[in-house]
Image (cartoon, rainbow, N blue to C red; front, side, top):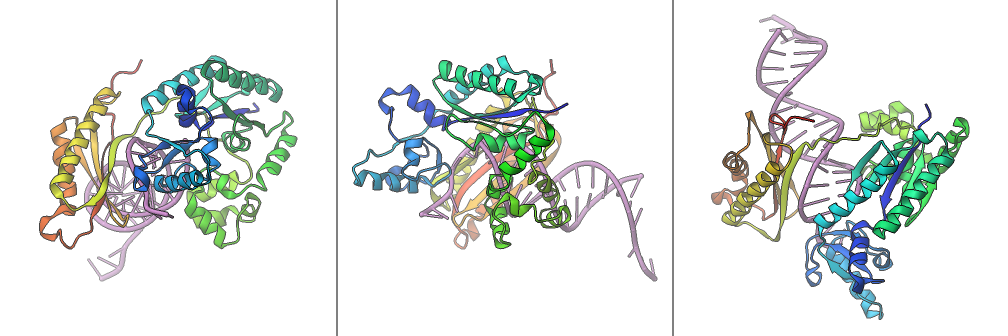
Length: 372
DNA sequence: TCTGGGGTCCTAGGACCC
DNA sequence: TCTGGGGTCCTAGGACCC
């Protein structure tokens, strides 16, 4: 049967919630992310609303850069950006209500992240019917939550996802047709001129690799045979061959199983203070265990730690227990044992300062609660 | 520009088993 | 005396996503 898939993406989600909830922020540029500390902060931008984007501020940008751009705007007499730390529990609640709205209209839904969902609209049998469903979902989100979403629709998840990003905010982009042949032509015409970066899974590294070969658009990608892409990128290259042609059979996954739980912390200043690092690590272990016990999982077999140095070199070390464990003591002991070689006092003077440490528990599941 | 914190998936080599 | 092939588990690193 013909598939019709839609992808819904909330517009500037975190910033839009803040603007909605705090009337004094109405119409101002808003940046949710790390504390900018007057330009000295170490984090990044999580979300910038559309006003802040006019200043050249966008997600994943260092918060210090965002601060400078806001200051530059202020010099020109424009309002400086409002920097907020973000209330993630709150965003989670709003997300759940939005997913509930979607689920009242569509049975098969994949909550792909806090602000994204795929919907299987194949049951509506025509693109016109599917469009009506999407319009009513957008409408209900606008009325009940006072937020806007952009939706993309197409014959599979790949096309739907790229289409949802095509017109933002508050967009609805349909790349498909009830007639199969016409549909394939529309998909091809839509994808070909787009930069390869639009394909999910192509990041900065892959983009740069292709750029050296003179490949910038999806059309350029179709020059390569499946074998050539496989040689360049392995298994991922084989599927990229199909993606470049708008082909994707990946299913809607309605239930996800968490595979790991972890925490990491970037220090305000890089440090060699091993007592401080051990204290932080012990605290992070506690918090991971707390998170674990409130989750559906009770035990773990894997522990891994991360150490990031001042120059961003990153080391990981892992250990697997023979039997599942669940107690704080076991986690702290093993995590400490794994980081010790990086903190060795005698070597300390020679060693680089440390920027971040992290702990993660993996291989969850042996003592899972009974399923309904 | 100087790079968060939460994750997932893939690769490659080595150990070990049959 | 010159050596297989397949499968699974483990570790470390890396790319990517929101």
